[in-house]
Length: 231
Length: 231
DNA sequence: CGCCGACTGTCACAGACCTGTCACAGGGCT
DNA sequence: AGCCCTGTGACAGGTCTGTGACAGTCGGCG
Image 1 (tube, chains in turn red, blue, green, yellow):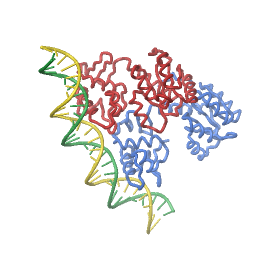
Image 2: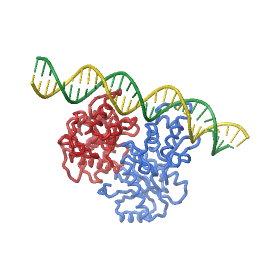
Image 3: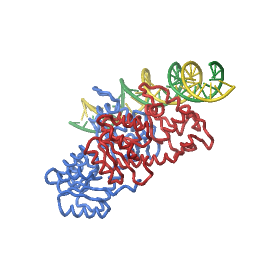
Image 4: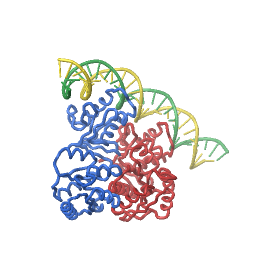
């Protein structure tokens, strides 16, 4: 998947000609290499041929829509995806992140803002690829799939580990129960259940110094949970 | 932040030849790339073709005036706009900001001053793109779903947070109780209730330095409330 | 093949916290 | 002054989360 070079190589999938051209121009000027596609099908083909570093993906596409494209990419690929979504519907935001996107940007968007988001996502990717992340006394080794606290190995169950990994992919970002269900369990839940809470609970018991007053996995009332980076 | 971002690309729309040439020269020397247009029509055309990062726009233009250009741009685009206005007329200022401009500068202006304003606006844009907004000592992080005052975490309840988020999405704009009810509570009330007031009051208690004389969440008599950006 | 242990999802429940409502007081506007 | 609007405190009902128990499932191992 793309090289680790200075110039990011992007794939832009957007059906509206004027927006696509405009963004392509703007992003090129910001120093990116850009390939474009007007449909989801073309986009997926280009993806396989060109191996971009990142995909910018419109949600409203003729044929297979952005969410579906997103899911298909995620079945085989790990590369970062930024969704473009129309203003009004905040619901899309949630669905977007649930479908596996790394970030979303609301249209209309100025090239500079999009550029900033792209760089943020790529930076995050680089941090992750260093294979280990540290949160206070907690160290997550992604390649060894181990978690240590104060140097001691923690015995996490598979689900607990997946949950912690997903949280740690987005440090400091609040994730709703819905999002976590999609990311960790791949369910399409509608009703709520205590499932996420229970698992968070078990994870806290192993991860936190004082499970009853957690400092790493914080509760975000009315939303869900968030993994904090201690100052 | 990412200082390796490309050179800002500006579009200057100004009918007076001498001023236009002077500013173009000065801005180029400050390290910007500049395109120029002498009329609103030309400016809009250039905008579509070249996708600048920011527009500097004279208010007094032959044909369609600056305000109108501003509004037209805003219908399709989010990019930052700085207005150039001849008089220090406060009315112009208000109209200008209402028409969607991000800043205004009074002529005659020195290139150095304009440059500073341009950089400030661009910085603001990048900061917003990181999903955090600042109002005085208050910082709202939309992705972490946290609010801090003077660096300290505030414990907002879900409803208070939603209310603050909606207000902060429209800084400086008065929102009626009806609007807030729809945005935050999602019901369609007809009769009035003290519901919004009560929540605003609780929010003020946590957010304001002196809750009894609020400086951030201002009351708009007979209408509703407004979140102000301190000067 | 069957036993066993570990892991996982579900449930019920208690308690903390939040929320909408009301009544009333005080202040601004005409 | 009088009216209308907003600020404020109390309160009861409701919502959300934490927690422990329990049963089903799965895989390993004898």
